[in-house]
Amino acid sequence: MQKEVVFRDCDIVDFCTATQDTNMIHDPEYMHRCRKQVIVPGMFAFSYAAILAEDFLKHSINRIQVYFNSLLSSGEQVALRVEINPENPAEIRLRACNSRDMLTTREAYTRMLKGTVPIHPQQLGIFRKLPVSEKQITTFARLIQTSDRQTAGFLFAVAYASQALFKSITEADTEVEHEIDELINGDHRISPFYHALEIILPSEFPVLRENGTLDYLIHFEREKFHKTYIAHLECQQEEHIIFQSMYKLVAVPDNIIMRMAKAKTS
Image 1 (cartoon, rainbow, N blue to C red):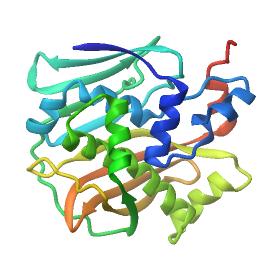
Image 2: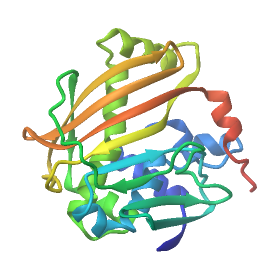
Image 3: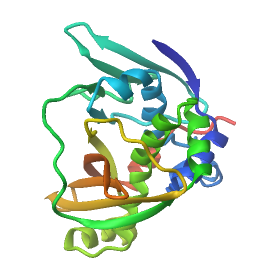
Image 4: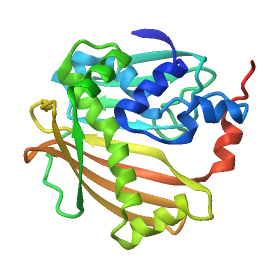
């Protein structure tokens, strides 16, 4: 299945409002002043692609592996695709392609599958609590074009985790959180970008209660000083696990990110 999509500035703004993403690279006013196109949030592209395999997501898998390879810009035509693995019908590959596939690296590709490893409660971390409203889910569902509130709620919780990670960094408690905060908000002018993300779902597809609170248990680990970090995250609501995830974050200088962003043509 394939769907052609153009991510518009107004949709990116609405997505970032719903998920509380304040990164300036998604802000049209800032990017246009820099003569650059707005960068599409990676979780926006992933969530939109995942909806093309909505039934498979809800009923046939418990594991998602996401890889981010390149940037997408507003105004670009992007082909979102889902492909069944001919060697394993229990696995679906997700793509977001313009000149290259944003969701594929040289080592791996984004996929949804049925894994054999059961979910175990996360033991380490600090809880970061975020309110969630019906309005946020409604906006999110409209942007990724689904009428299924359960799927929209789950994918929203995954996208909203970025704000929880940012909260952990800006309200740093641990040594590693302080280290990442210094990278972002100090004189280094470096941002930790997602390189890879693995999501594990409970045995029954999680149902989000709207107009409540999402509790994110987060534990950061350092792989290489000022280079790469791992974030372990468990999303809960009313002590029920919505999902667990592990992020690999790579430190990328802000000037390189801006250099990668496409020039504004008009």
